[in-house]
Length: 294
Ligand code: DGL
Image (tube, rainbow, N blue to C red; front, side):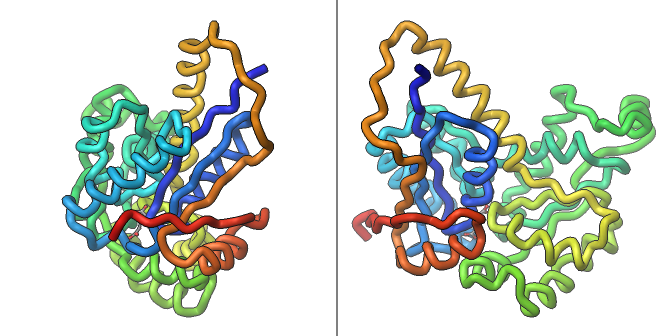
C-alpha cells in the first residue's frame, strides 16, 4: 500500500484553491493541508520582508501538520520570497513561476506572451526572466513554425506586456468573480494586453482562474489562457515519485483517518467556507482558525 503523502499549500486566501483542485483531480493518494492567510490578504502590495515572514510562519505551521512537500500556491510569494524561503527550509518547495513560464512558452503561437498578476509579481519581473530561462534550458513552443523561426533568430519569444490587476483579488475574495464589476474592471485591465497583441496570457495569480469566464468574455477565443497550476501538478507528481523511491524500504503505516483536505485560515473561517463553496464544485468542509501571533 502506498503512503498517503501530505502536501502543504498556502495562499493569501481562496486563490490557491485553483491549484489544490488540479492536484486533487490529477493525483490520487495525497492529502492536502491548505492555509489561506485571509487576515493578511492581499499579498500583492506587501513588502519582500513581510512576504518572507508570512512564508516562514506558514511553512513552519505546515511542517508541524505533517507536510512533506510545500506548494506556494501564490504567485506573489513565489515571485518574491521563495528563493529566500528555499534557503531557510529543508523541505521541497514548489512555486508557480517557472512552471507557468514553461507552459506559456510551450503554448505561444506568435511569441507574444502577456502576464496579468499582482503589483508585487509584476514589479519583480520574475516571469520575464523565467520565460528567458525556460527558452535557454531548451523549452520550445509546440508550434513548429515559431519554434523554427526562434531557433533561426527570426522571431523573438518574450513577455511582451505585464499588467498589474490589484482589484481582481478583492473581487474574488468577496465572491464577486462572476459579477458586472469584475467584467468592467477586466475590460480596463485587459485593454493594454489587447493593444500589445499578446497571443498567450499567463494567469499570474492563483485567484485569476476563477475569473476565466469574465476574461474569456473580454478577450474572446483568440488568446490562449495559461494557468500555471497545470504545470505545478507535474512538479508535484515528480517530487512524489522521488519521495516514493527514497522511502521504498520504509514500512507504510495505515492512515489513521480518511480526511483528504484540511483547511486553515488566519481570518474568518465562515467567509472562507462560504466563498470557497461558490468557487469549488465540492463543498468545503470544516475550516479551522490559525493565528501567527500577530
Ligand atoms: N493568489 C495570490 C497570487 O497568486 C495572492 C494575491 C494577493 O493576495 O494579492 O499572487
